[in-house]
Image 1 (spheres, one colour):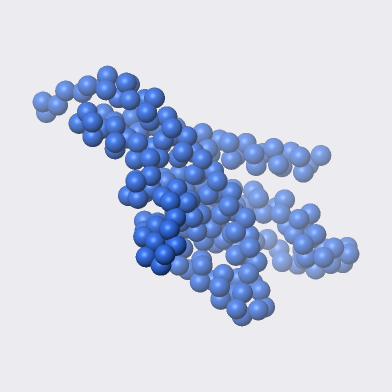
Image 2 (spheres, helix red, strand yellow):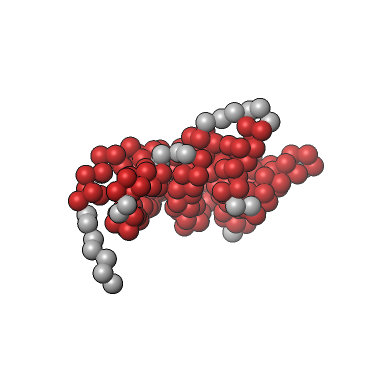
Length: 222
């Protein structure tokens, strides 16, 4: 191998990559929070006695989990555009990742709920709680530790899926890296640094998530 690494163009381009990194973090956190809210609704809806609600929620989960996130981004950006509903690349990527992550998180939550003793709902009713109160005070504190590993995986999946925004012109971390390396032709160096950046971001997000879960458990124990 006669390849000679040249790192100086990468260090000079770091100020141009930072906005892309911040956009990646923003997309990841916002899409995950929105997806978590929707996932609880989907989980509830999939257990609904109403056929229409159950069908809509089940269809969302099935489509989200069995089609590529890249295809979902294309549908949000190009598909809606063909129907006359133009959205910018940021909104398209945010919507697609939220859609995708919500489907997976709904199954994570379902698995956690299936791992709990369902008789606790009857116990809550015996204490005078309605189903929402039973879920909030009895089920949720037990559910969170069960779903943290799966939810953590989905958080990282959301982070990595943001890189697909490059295909619709979004200047997140991968898009910004591609633009920067195209000016210097030092692709190997740029993408090594970007891969390390994704690794650090993933570890940081996991630590924050586990820290938040630990804080929640401590608050509930007092």
